[in-house]
Length: 348
Ligand code: NAD
Ligand code: IPM
Ligand code: MN
Image (cartoon, rainbow, N blue to C red; front, side, top):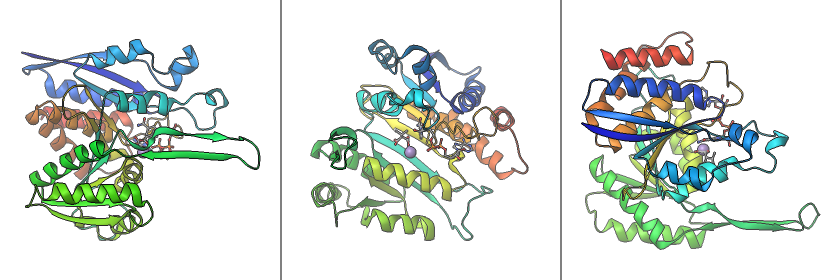
């Protein structure tokens, strides 16, 4: 039988609440099967920082990296908490994991499931995947500020785009489009960001010649937000940079029934490092501790994790149980009630 070593990082706020449900579903779908998940919990996030002053030690990172995969809830404290003023949990923990484990594909599927309460009157069929670059762009932290606090303060943040980094994620997106509906949309802002946008465009055009069966189009990111609301059915695979992908996927979550349903995978396709699966949403301090969080995004992240590990039957059972649950939703349920209902669906 196969053993999968899984690092579990519940994190802060609603993170532990939704991860508890995701783990229940993972256990339910693997019980009595050929695969066993050996789970190691890691206490990381704003809570850990406030206790110990650590964000992510070298030992933590090495221990996490020795696992086969990672499940993460959400990290980040209450915005404005003065005790976190000198910390940057997001950069020092979440982005550090994505960068050091070379998660260059941030895979964020969006599907409007029947019964999901989306905001659009006439949404049509929505089923697309955002392939967000995960290790470059404005996220690299290559910037600085001088004359801080003076009227002449200068603050810079540089977007780093390498031909190598762009090509590998673009190639992944084309291969994905080839397995789906053969359509790829590059989203950027080439009219203003001429250097990086120009390079992304040239690389997409070059790789396109290797995938003659894939239709390619291009949208500026501002226009892409229009179409995500007015005609989301036009998208199949969207490939875009780290920051645009962050923004578009919160919007995509909203149009497909809420951020509580949006799952993601931070993938290292080469398999050199463990990939990490997490909801798109954050720690939601506004509802933390109230059992109001929807655990579905975390549970669908488990489905992505199972798929990534080649456990496609198990992944399909989780997705089907979620689909059935969404189709039959009415009334307000707690986080645990939703998790329990999906567990029962997986067992059925
Ligand atoms: P957020 O995603 O935490 O919350 C935005 C809104 O969505 C809130 O109203 C929240 O209640 C709601 N929401 C989020 N998840 C939900 C769920 N599962 N069910 C129901 N409602 C849900 O974004 P934010 O408020 O901008 O950020 C809060 C903290 O989380 C910040 O510290 C931020 O940096 C961090 N964050 C972490 C991650 C991550 O760990 N991957 C992602 C985004 C934000
Ligand atoms: C996300 C989050 C992160 C991001 C933050 C918390 C660093 O918003 O996973 O979407 O910007 O990538
Ligand atoms: Mn985000």
